[in-house]
Length: 431
Image (cartoon, rainbow, N blue to C red; front, side, top):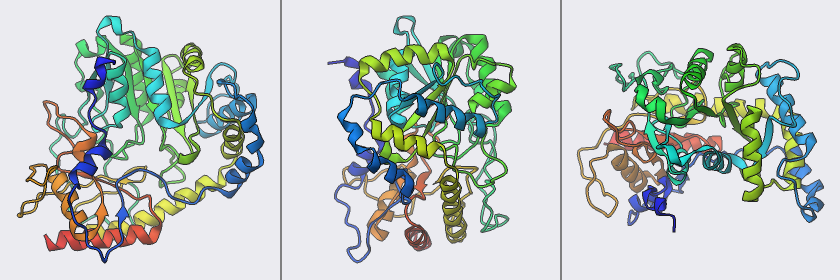
């Protein structure tokens, strides 16, 4: 077996199951899961209809490169969404459909890393665990960037005072963005891929055009690829200020061919439909890799995706639903804890504190991790599941940025989100 498998950490939700092992939740309360970032809004009816109408397509082998119509729809969406020059995205050479986030992020690293040269993959901390696993299994060393708050800013999360209950502008600013300038030159010299995630998981921080251009400058200087994970790019609160994208930053920096850029965006979660787009010299070998990997997107999914990429009304409605959740949940939580609206995404990333009583650990013993204690006690007392922040972060010389935090995913229906917030408020007040 591949010896690198022994380097992999347990997946966050495996750790969560272990943490909650033996815990007894109140039987009179229904379970509300806020731990997994799985959107649970009703899928657009026209997308489901497109899948149904095209089910006979399962009788044919799909091409790995995808239908020309799908690649054209994606190129058109990119051009409209990021205000790219007309014709700058060649559907034939710069776009590749993929089967969702994990497949694309993991596979691209296997394709791009040259393990013979002591490579490293630079990534945020906290982060989506696939970045780390992909690096390790490709023979690269992960390097975790501190965010700007850990790299020098003294910051304590603001109290309820001064944060209006309907404030959805995002108060975290760029404090939670990874600090590119804190990475030593010797790390950049070994770097082969830089992972960025904007809007960030779990912080919701949004990278500005200038930030993305700075990443491209470093890539040019040190010869590495920037892979931008933009799966939350369409979940934001101000309709007039959508998050910037890597390809947009490349154009503003004069990279007309999107050199060193690979950008990824996902769609309806169960559809497993997304794409990579960017530098044709990167997409071409990735297509070759995926041809052997055998990961072509089924034809019904491709045809449904064409419909999805061609319609914005359902995306605007999706954002409205998330805005409503934040507007109702934040005032409830702010009455007992410091919690900020993210700039984008559907996550809350509050700092929590250990209670005075002992909480069960992974095997029923005590734990010093405030996020773990909060998570287990909340489950035992209110039957609500959140995710300890340390499970999606790693220890560095700056500490573990998730150790005193939890991730709360506002993905359930609005009544469930409100009910969960009220239970969290009751739990915190009781502590």
